[in-house]
Image 1 (cartoon, rainbow, N blue to C red):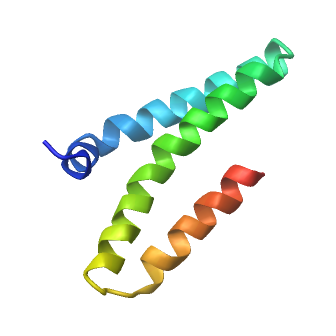
Image 2 (tube, one colour; image 1 turned 90 degrees about the horizontal axis):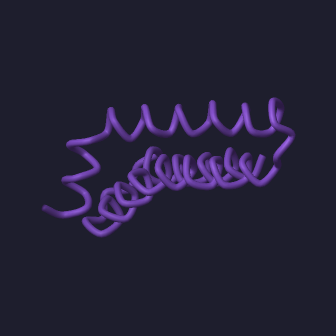
Length: 83
């Protein structure tokens, strides 16, 4: 099974895992005053959310399908991760 198929078949689970990681990050930062937990969980959650978008954008560019989605979504992901 390719990575793209895996991500597509498990999109709901990856979204739920990202949500759990974000909640754990907030608990770590504000409940335990640990920025290391915050940094680690936000990094992993960003990767889980960003990799499917990046793959989709790359595949769209590979077949020369240019639209607003593959060009804006990766930019928005990077901006959100930088905050």
